[in-house]
Length: 186
Image 1 (cartoon, rainbow, N blue to C red):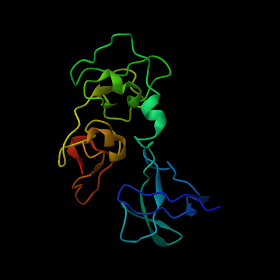
Image 2: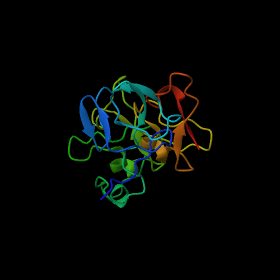
Image 3: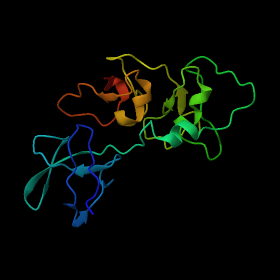
């Protein structure tokens, strides 16, 4: 059985299996990066290249977050108190101190219907706990999405009225995450 096709941030296809660091990998890996990545099939696609066995090998970050339309994300919400009325956007959402740790668990707490990561620090925040999520107003095409998430655009699709957050102009060096307006609503 062939592994499912994995599409990357720059819409390349992952090539499985691939060799890296003396091993063979049939899934995206976290080695040397804080976001999972893979070797891609097209030399002109991806974030760049690395040298393996004397050859330049193209790579890109994998698209790995759960799809926002997956039923569990719509129904697996934290229970809300009877008569709860959401407050305006930008209120704090998601500090659960329990099993509910992902922003989509708290969408019902936001007037906009969208709670997403807003990491307080400059490093990856693993969950909403500690104030690392906030209510967000979905943006029209061309609006920024995913700022302060410390994540790639796929984690911020719900922040866009189109349902799709994509890389903006990342320049020569490319982007690691959406911080600083690096991602835009399609």
